[in-house]
Length: 94
Image 1: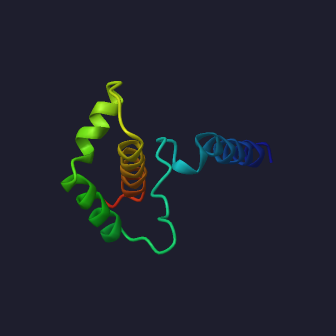
Image 2: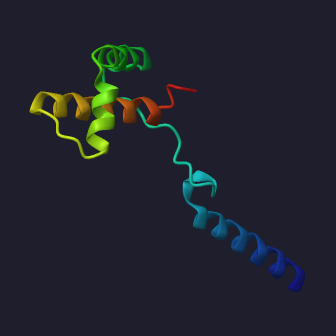
């Protein structure tokens, strides 16, 4: 009886400690995020390519180094960053 209690205690402790790492398995990776409705990896990649061809990555660099941007450039930078976060968050690049 004492042995059964020890085994049961060990199992309960083990299961409860797994919850400390969260649902990520303890490695800090939350997993892929869902894309917004109507979006796909291909559609986001296409929009990123369109913004790339307009020179938006250079504007992103300018903004991150403290450079001035017009309101339309700022909107493009914000759109680019949002799309990139969606693309990477959904693990489209993998």
